[in-house]
Length: 236
Image 1 (tube, one colour):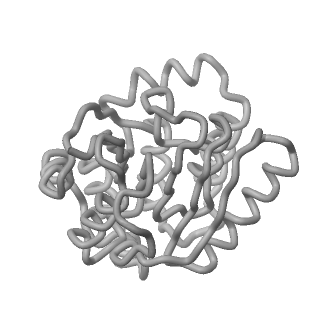
Image 2 (image 1 turned 30 degrees about the horizontal axis):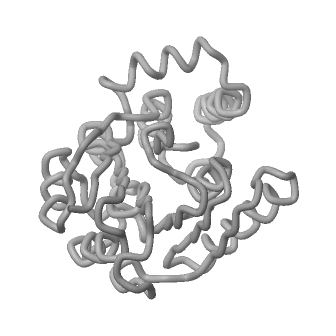
């Protein structure tokens, strides 16, 4: 599930890309598929970094990357092991909401970004996430889960205060919002809900097949039901 719209970004030959809070490395892989770039996938979780390495190894074996290079590492977003101004693009997707010291994390991702280059940040959208919290105490209090909910203006202000300027934004993944509401309603930890299983099968089908009708429907619903807020900024 790719949240960032790479068509909006300048990913050119030799670009150095950092996917911080990379999870399973989906955006690292997406960046590498854009062309011969140098990508780094970083996450504080050793288990997630192993997943990212497995994904990238698999996609590279399939010939998905043409001339690119990549690396994975375990790193704390609040203290990144990189010099100032060393990346052409930094992606921080669905990560800041997990970080208690989010001001420090934002300062770090901006520090390692070159002046005049782009930062993309996505977080759960305020209203869909607020409803998830209201529906399920288990979801709200999950260890390692979300520690805050951002309003769009609040997040933009935080990022711009660190030395960037917003130039675009959008919402994404409207078809996923009802799935999470349903999970929270029946219990996030349950694995026996037929409705949740059926909806999950639908989402997997949609992601694999990418039918035009679902793409159009998702695009139309994103302004109203989009689960993620995505903000594009440039370092000043």
